[in-house]
Amino acid sequence: MRMNPGVFAIAAAASLFPMSIPMAGGDAQSPRAAFLKMIDRPRVPLAPEMSAMGEADGVAQFHFTYAADGAQRVPGLLFRPVSAGGTKLPVIVVLHGTGGNKQGQVPLLRRLAGKGFVAIAIDGRYHGERSAQGTGSADYQAAMLRTFQTGKEHPFLYDTVWDVMRLIDYVETLPGADASRIGLIGFSKGGMEAYLAAAVDPRIRVTVPCIGVQSFRWALDNDSWQSRAGTFKTALDSAAKQEGVETAGAEFLRHFYDKVAPGVYSDFDGPAMLPLIAPRPLLTINGEIDARTPGPGLQLCFDAAKKAYAGAPDHFRTVIEPKTGHAVTAEAQNTAIEWFERWLK
Figure 1: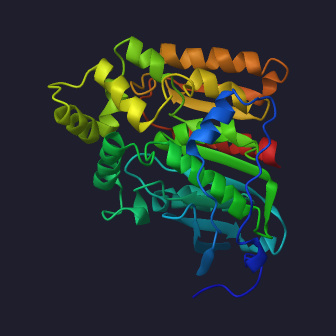
Figure 2: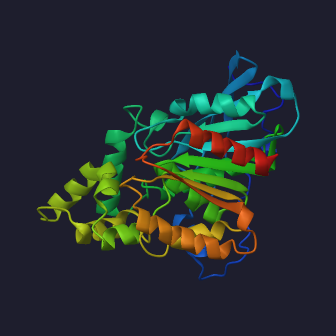
C-alpha cells in the first residue's frame, strides 16, 4: 500500500525540486561544468511514490520510485531504524555493480540502518526492476550498443550519475533524512558512478568508491583495458562487427568510448574527476591485483587527488587490499562504514 502522510510522505509542492548545484572551485570550462552540461536534460516533476514493506529487526523498509527524466523512473529501497522516530538521520546511498541490483545491497542496507543511517539503494540503468531479466546483463549491453549506433542516452555510468543527482533532489524532500549529511558508496560500476557523481554534485558530503577508481587513459595506453572492457564485451564486439572490425583492440575501444561515454578516458578520467571531490571526505578501496583497476593508473588518480587534498590530508584515504582482485572484503566494508560514521556523525 502507499504510505499515508508521515515521516516519509512527500508534499505535493515538493514533487518538483529544482536542482541547484554549487559550482565551487570551477568555471564554465571546468570538468565539472562540462560533465553537467553533457548529462543535462529537461527537469520533470519527481512524482515520487513510496510504499511500506514492513519492519524487521527494528528496521522499517520502504520501496519507492521517482522520475529521473521524461522517460525513466528510478526504483529504490529505503531502510531506516524504527527507533529514530521523526529524527533527521544522515543518509547513505549504495550503488551496485554490473549485473547487480538494489536487492543485492539489502544486507548492507540493514547494517547501515542498524547503525543509525537512512540507507538507500537504487537500480542502475537497465538493471534490476529496470531490466526485463532483473539483472541488467542483456538489456544493459543492448542499451550500450544502441548508444553507439544512435548517440542517444549514456547507459554506461553517466545516466546513473544523473539518477543519483535526482535521488538527492528526492532525499531533500524527505522529512526524516538530513540532506546536509549524504554519503555515497558504490561497487565496481557503482564505484565509478560514485566518484563521478561526487565530483559534480557537492551535496554528496562523503564518498567511498570501491573497486571503481581508475585511469581509463592509462589502461588504453598500456594494453591493460581488456578486463574493464570485458564487462561490456557483447556490446563492444557487436559494435566492432557492425563497423567491419574483426577484433576490437585499444583503438576501436577509444572509438567506442567516444560514442558511448565521451570523455571517460580524457576530460572525465579518474585523475581529472577525483580532485573535484576535495576537500570533502573521500575513501577509495581497491584490490592490489584487480585487473580492472590497474595499479599504475590508479596511482595517477591518487597523485592527482593528493594535490587537491593538500590542505586537508586527513579527508583523503586510500585502501589497497593485499592479494585481492575485483572484490571488497568484509574488513574493507567495515573500514567504509567507520569512515561514514566518522564524517557523517
